[in-house]
Amino acid sequence: MRSRRMPIIVVLVTGAAFLMSTRSSTQAAAVAPPSPPGAPIASAALPGDNAEITMLASQPGAMGVVSDAAGHQLVVAYRDAVMPPVSHTEVRVALVSKPEAAAVHLALMDEYDREHQARAYSGPLLGVDSLSVEDDPTLGTVVVNVNGGDLTRIRGFTQGLNRSVVIKETEPMHLAHRDGDVSPHYGGAAIAPSGRAGYCTSGFAVTNAFGDPFMTTASHCYYDIANGFGTWISWRTNSSGGDLLWGNADYYRAPVQRHDIALISPTYSTYSGRMYVDDTGSKPVSGASDITQSGTYCLSGSTSRTHCGLTVLSFNTSVCTATRCSDNVYKLHDSLTSWVGACAGDSGGPIYSDAVSSVIIRGMIIVYGGTARTTASPVNGWTLGCGRDLWAEKWSTFQSEWSLSIRLG
Image (tube, rainbow, N blue to C red; front, side, top):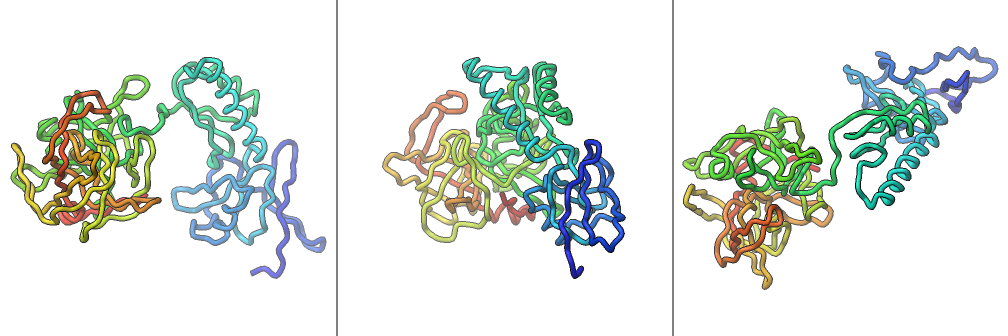
């Protein structure tokens, strides 16, 4: 440890910023300049578990941390930053100061809102269909991700704000919604096979022993709707009318195997350890375990949406429908006076405990029955059947069948 630490200061030289450690007047001031934005990370940069990097990354002047292929990391600081002195860690200087970056964010959002109101909330705005703005430590500047439309106008607008701003074309950005869920995908979303002959519900994200990600759902969705084949997608399309891809059914149990469980593997998408608790709101998954005691539980389904108040009638039940049987499942009941129960299309949806700020996965719905009624599907308007009783596969069944671990949010 050094016996004396001095502050790092910013020196501007012909428009470029360098961070330099000041030394006492009796010491030589031989200080190498930091890496410029976009330069390869020096092999001498320290690994990511270094305490100096952790400390520097938490400073108000830090833009972020970047890594090379070998896992070495360094901190990127805004051009105007005054960072604490450290003994080894390299600091890269960004092209923009923190106020300059904030000004770009604010100007773009203000202009977007102004046009939004002027056009009665119809696009495209700033010449594009959707955009996001972010401080990118890898490039050391502000990046504007845009989708659709003519980029000429937004290029001109951003260059007028700061010439170092980078424009990137990207995929469309949407408000998250369970009926048109975008990657990274959540549990409790409406999913369908290509062709949309019907729909089911996504369950919860898991990983196998090799770290491969999957999303759970009910196996009968493949057999009864998709005949065991096909790519699965969100029910709604994106803004251009294209499919929002979920993945393929790589693992599922056939009717003779007595468990109605399946795994979707990702194609051009990722799965998140979160699930929908209303149409647009979600909560992180904080754990998974079987139901072992009486209490009230919740369901997140595409048709019945999210509701709680489900009680357990049996911890070990067998249930058969016209196409298959499942054993060692829960039987639950919606005991509320204004009951919702479960409906067609909810299959695959998670059964969970609400832990206020998170959820704990308990199982996955596969069958509904009992007291009957119909409802208009909020997904597509179809008239669908509902029942007050519901049967659900246990979390431990997924865990034991495929050696899975729950993915936390």
